[in-house]
Image (cartoon, rainbow, N blue to C red; front, side, top):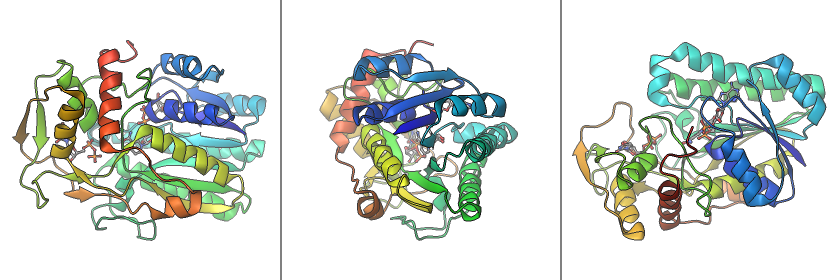
Length: 338
Ligand code: NAD
Ligand code: UDP
């Protein structure tokens, strides 16, 4: 199949490109490098020995996207293109709504005009909101989000679902990711945040490599076994392989399917720090600080549906995630050197 990855030069998109190419699919990437670099795709090509059709374009630009789709005629789209920093979305809600919603509408309009009927969407566990207790399963109603980023995901899910009600030939898979971490085992591609990382694993890696002095753990007094928050961390290569299964499923399906991509196994912030130190034999100095506003004590998935519907299950463990994150960080202390 030929798959168009909107936002494919980013962290999850570049790893998914490796998995798709490895399974014999063709890959087209459209990205404006708002939060990435074409270097990631160059490395994907080196790793796989295959070429990627790469377009620098804004996915909100309908004229450009339509031309690309008319030329490439993809069988399926994976929509990764979005802004994803929770704190920034609170400061810049209009930019977030404009970018995230508009990219989705543009892709749907271009699909309508070119006859492409399959789309896989990068959603997030954040749409379960604070009302749903973990483990979160797909049958639960969506909850209230605590920030504009989360609301864009919730709204985009609704838009895609409505589109599939109106067009019975449309096949939509909404993938709700839990906490992707890790990197390709080669250490050649990985997560490359700009500025101070918001997420735990890039922060831990940057402390270990000496770019930051110490990690602040946000809260040590939660009602959890060690007092720190629990999350469902998933290796980005497992996540990438989940996309290959989703794309293949999409081809034989109509309507909307919601699927969690997680391991179902919660780990605490201290589990991450301790495992990272142990498997990599490095020090990660930390202190326990105040809670971060909006953080929930425990968020993890019920991962059974993905196994039942997609035949996919995460295979890599926490040690693999910590080892591969470090392998990427230590070999690329400045990321892709933008
Ligand atoms: P990322 O920032 O590395 O990748 C997103 C890519 O989209 C970037 O390459 C960026 O340049 C591109 N992009 C953004 N707006 C664009 C536009 N208008 N036109 C063209 N390209 C555009 O992020 P990621 O971690 O790879 O996440 C991919 C998707 O998964 C995002 O939609 C994100 O919200 C979602 N998601 C990520 C996580 C996570 O923890 N990483 C969790 C849940 C959901
Ligand atoms: N966290 C932390 N220090 C940091 C970054 C994150 O203690 O510098 C914690 C955060 O409170 C949460 C977990 O690590 O419990 C995962 O946070 P992240 O932002 O990576 O993902 P989230 O689940 O919040 O989307």
